[in-house]
Structure formats: structure tokens, C-alpha cells
Image (cartoon, rainbow, N blue to C red; front, side, top):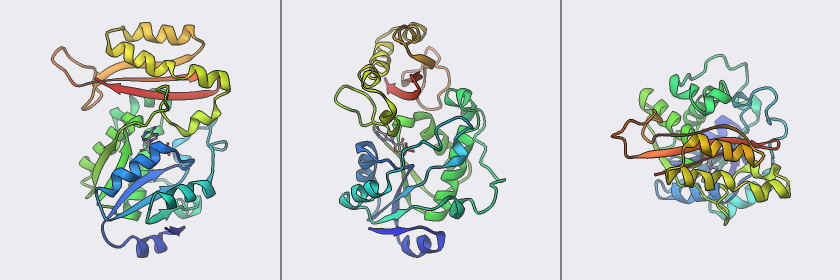
Length: 263
Ligand code: AMP
């Protein structure tokens, strides 16, 4: 696996069709499943590790976000990744980033209501990464469902020549979606954490989302939202809509977890 730190070295190394998986590191099986999916879309697979300051607000966990570069490298090497792009902040943001990608209303809904500017930060860094790596395909997890839709919309509306490939959410045995932030949970919180996914299942089976929010609150969570939306564009579904997704976000102690379930 070739590890490159700057854009010049990346451009030289990324010649030929490449499938790309952007990450913030602290890798787990969910990330590796995206790497495996990427392999079906090009001969060479590239991964990036970059904790993107632009998508964190003051008071969020930018500074404490787990950085485990050596371990991540070993995992990617073992997974047969060809190229790792791991830029410093100075490489991707050599000057203040004044030009940003504005996702519009989709970016202000759901997650965007609770993390203003989050999707602007995500779209901007993904745009930059796609321009640097120039992959034929890029893989994004459904774990971050709204993010996947924002990136799809960006690629479509800005005519970027890349195929966006969705990857299924990889879960722990008890249903908890794998996440780098799961490491923040205490043992008691870790035991409680699968409730979010269980309640998404109950909403799928007909429980009103407000009631599911109340159950989370009663179990000690601070829920931000739990809603049923249309899969294609996350609009509020009408009576004829059949392809739905339940999405939820809630804080458990100091850890904010998100999850979703299609139905
Ligand atoms: P992150 O490192 O959290 O920014 O995530 C990098 C990519 O991995 C994103 O496309 C995520 O949606 C995806 N991802 C995160 N967790 C999972 C998971 N449990 N299963 C599948 N993909 C995931």
C-alpha cells in the first residue's frame, strides 16, 4: 500500500481507474466493508483518512476524535488497499477555505437542524477529495444516510464524473451500528446503545416516531429527532410513498449516535 501525504504525490500515484473510500480514520469493519465494495468498481482501491475540521462545530469532538493512524494503516494494508491518502490539514486547507459547497435545503434538514453547517463542511471536503483523487467510483455508507444523499445530489447537480456507490451498514452482534464514536461509550452506555436501532425497528412496525422518542428519553437518552422519511430525497412521505427510511439521532451521555433503517 502506497501512503501519500500531498496532492502532487497523490496525482502521480492515482493514475488509472480507482475506486475511492473517504474516511476520518479509526477504522472498523464498516469501513472495511466499503473497501470490499470498492474493489468491485475498479482494479485499484484508494482510501483517505482526514478528520475534517470544517464539518465540526465549536464544542463538538474535533480535538478528541480518535486518531489511530498506525492501526488504520495495518487494517487497510491487510484489506489489500492500493493507495492511502492521508493529508495534513495544511495540505487540504493551505489557506482559509472561503469557497464552500452549499447543499441547500437537504443539508439543513434532520442532521442539519442539529449540526448547522455540517453538510456544507462534508460536501466541501468530499468535493476537494474527489478533485484530488479523481476516482471513477466513490463508496459511502448508508449509516450516514443523509450524507449519502447530499453527496449524490452534489455529484448530480455539479456534474461530477464519478459513480456514487452506497454500502450497507455493518452492525455489532446486538444491532448497534459500528461507529468510531462508539468508543466514547461507557460499559453501561454500550449496553444501552442498541435501543436506538431496536426503536427504529419498532417504528418500521408501526410505532409512532414521537412515542419512540419518548421511549429513548425515558431510558435516559436525549433524542434530537426520530422520523420517517422518503428514501429517495428524505422528504416527508405522502400516502403513496412505499420506499421509506426511519432516521434517528440521540445523545447517550456525551456520545451522539445516529442510525437509520430502510423499509
Ligand atoms: P467516517 O470515518 O465515520 O467519516 O465514515 C467513513 C465512511 O464509512 C462513510 O461513508 C460512512 O457512512 C461509512 N461508515 C461508517 N460506519 C459504517 C458502518 N457501520 N457500516 C458501513 N459503513 C459505515
